[in-house]
Length: 214
Image (tube, rainbow, N blue to C red):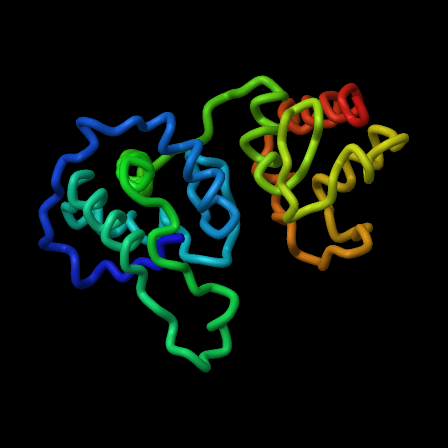
């Protein structure tokens, strides 16, 4: 999502749609639709398929761009993302489809991104392990106990059945150490060891040990 070209939008004024937007819902929609491609510190996402949204907006904010204008830029890019020229080496890997979210969903996502992107010190809220799994893992992995059905990565009820804590932790912090058949390398973010606190990492391991196959 959001291939940002900020230069043409610096003077565009925001529509202040955030007054009617649900930021919590926007965050959830961002994680579901955008977090697998974009880095955004407050969302805890660290993918590099698309632009780093914090880096994209940090300088613009420093230059005086307000959140309403950021929101307008994000809405514009959702509805009409900058296309990568066909034939470019990265054409197939980073092209973002137009209208990935629409209507109120798009407004909520744009308002959420505008509220956190490029804000110094932004970081994810502290969450219990079940919610942390849903936010950070559920969009890519199926786990019956969590009610998630992602297919980007393996079904954890199958691949982690009978595995011990050491194995599960290794798969979180170094997912390329053992790749499940049918899935390629680098599908899963490689920086969970640094982006998760030790407490969150241990919580995820314990949660999976308790709930895989349940």
